[in-house]
Structures are given as structure tokens and as C-alpha cells.
Length: 175
Image (tube, rainbow, N blue to C red; front, top):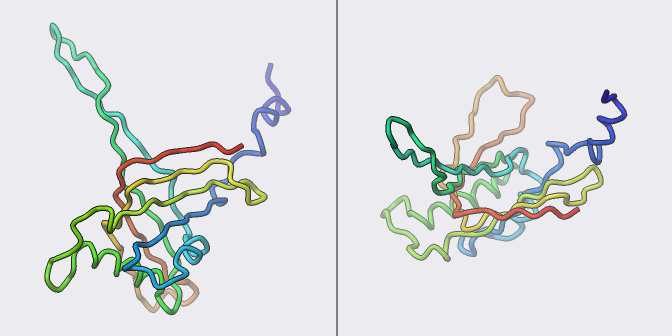
């Protein structure tokens, strides 16, 4: 019969911790002023390991539905960022989106290589070493969320979320 020692032996490294991660992402040249990569690594408060779905194709056969694996799709990915008083990251995300579609004249970049980047999510162990990494390929922001302002938040730092579309991701276990 399994016991607590058997369970502890199976939980390698004490278990992966949800609060041990780092997000790094270069901004396109037109959106960056410098330092955004390092700032995002510190100020990204929350994210997720990217999700994927393999769809189903239902094929009818003599009154039954036969399920066949369909294409893989990748769900949008989001980060939550702490805002600093110079709005450095918020401004960079706004410039990035404005390059894709300018607010004043509805024009923007047409070549995806000019506005898409690769982003990196590193899952860390308790010593800061990467235990698993994800590379999101061809990423760009599709939604920069509002920042809520109100008198009730006297003890909170502003934060905002950014949602991205991307082409696909690659994962790598480094341990």
C-alpha cells in the first residue's frame, strides 16, 4: 500500500511552483525605447503556460459519429503586467499595436515579420534555474486591457493585461 514517503519520492524537486517563472519578449524595433525585455521579466506578474487543442472531426457512419483527430489550434495567450509610473511597458505595447494598425489613419505594417516576435516563458525551480521553457512563435498583441482607476485601491499597484495571438509554440524540458 502506498504511503506518504512513496508520494514524496514521486514528487520530483518538491513539485513545480506556479510562482516561479520568467517571461522575456523582445519588442519590435519601432515599439522599443530600450530596457523593455528586462523590465517585463521583472514586472510580468502573471501568465500561463500556453494552451493547445486538437479538434475533432465527426464523421457519421450508420447512425454513429466516428471521431477523427482534426487540426491543432493554439489559444490566445495573456500576461498581466505591473505598471510603473513612467508607463514604459504600457507605452511600448501601445506603440506595438499602433504600428500594426495606426489609430489615426487605419494604416499599419503589412509584413508579419515587421510586427511579430518570439516570446519566451521559462518555468523556474526554487533556485532560479529553468526546468521547462516555451517559445511562442510569431506573437503580436491583440488586446491591451484597460487599467482600472478608483479611490478604493489605495494599497495596490496598477496592473494591466495584454492578450496575444501567436502561430504556435515549442516546448523544451531542460532538466
